Amino acid sequence: MSKLNIGIILGSTRQGRLSPQVGEWVKRIADQRGDANYEIVDIADYKLPLLGEADAAVQAAAWNEKLGSLDGFVFIVQEYNHSITGALKNALDYAREAWNNKAAGIVSYGSVGGARAAEHLRGILGELSVADVRIHAALSLFTDFENGQVFKPSDFHLTNVNGMLDQVLAWSGALKTLR
Image (tube, rainbow, N blue to C red):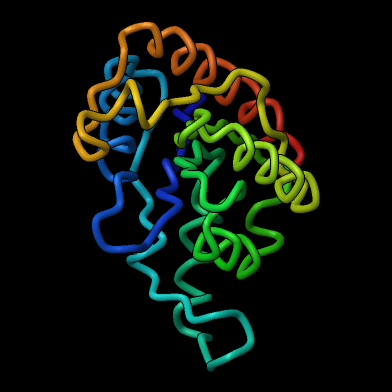
């Protein structure tokens, strides 16, 4: 069986965002495993306008094509006002079938580890027929980011990231049989 393709979705588009640092960290850990093809998928690259406000046929087609090429996801989720970013919600809404019958893990960060954003994302993923896995890494803005800007994760997060990746791969492989 060929290796699964897992997208590491960066969930923010704002200037000065921290998600690229977190995403690259997850990718380094994942690549060391050698058990799947992992890639960073930055929603900022797709320039999706607010859903319904402009003709976005080209952007939506590219976004859906990228999602369709993936077997599973790891969402890098930052907490904004106790939830996910508007950009991530918008990107989720731009696709339907491309999400279906796939698995997802979550790596969140915020003042309380991004836990509230992760829980909101889980509800949305359920509606999109994405099976989110239980294990998730919750990073603190206070202890895992130096001066709130430079990502320096504690070593103990490796256990959760690897456990989450184990579950994402197992579920993605099982769900692939439904697609």
